[in-house]
Length: 394
Image 1: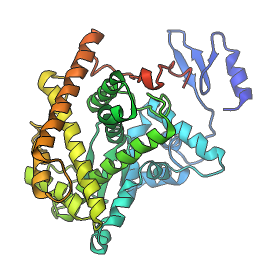
Image 2 (image 1 turned 30 degrees about the horizontal axis):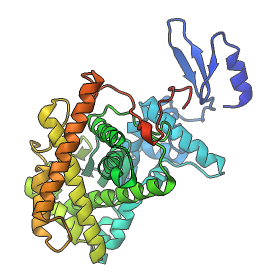
Image 3 (image 1 turned 30 degrees about the vertical axis):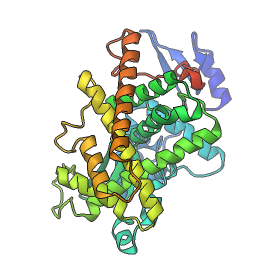
Image 4 (image 1 turned 180 degrees about the vertical axis):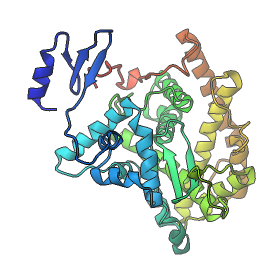
């Protein structure tokens, strides 16, 4: 939106400038946020124009007729975004930054830039495996629930993980390893609380607009590097389902995609395959440790779920074995991967229980029953995070 248009809108009684665009008051109360003025595109329907705000013109045309699994992944991303104004604002910021550099915007290219760990995992596998998994579209999507899925659609196989899963890993790493960097315990506990709220869908997925902390660049890079390893194990696990033929040979029904519920032994097999499929021994050890940490993080969620009904429970899932069972299976099957010994495993589990107790104390001190379910944001005050005014500051 040009400054001239903004000045015209600001002449409306009660209008005020927002971080992007103008807030115009409505007669019945509240305000309308006018963020941009865009030209209509000949031949585009109303739905096309809705998608054009987040996609390139070529991508909008692809959405009309899904011919390939890459189109299907694009559709997953676009559908998850188009009805969520806050997520659209996140994409708007990225789009403006890309176009300000004179580059063309693409929603798929944006998500490819967010997480390259899938490609790194592929490169670690054998040529035989690469022939199978390289053509399969893979990547993040703005899905609310932290999860990763290997799906069979009419257009072909697709592997997708929610953006919130990456954020869940990131904040759990701060919660469990922040002490090594001198972070105070209160910030570590609040990081675990953010991770919990990501699991329940309550934490706003606007981290690029409203950062919850401002870390030293070197420290932040280290946390992102560790997060990459956790994501790489996750991609490897989903590739394992594909390479081990857990999807079966039947095509999905007319609904478009089949969300396969894997048996517990298949989940164990996919965990092991994620590690054994890589050819570099050191990378295999790093992936084993990443898998170990993921299981610990999920066990932490389970521990909270034992006490609070508003937290998920993985140990009673019909589709996934309990995190501790998966963790013990990993350790038993991979004695040469540098995983913690039995005594160290007990220490790690006790640390997760201590973190659970600290989080429960934090929730009780808030005197709110809906801490895990109320929509909003939590900030790490000791790490530079501070509340911002929605739409005015970001």
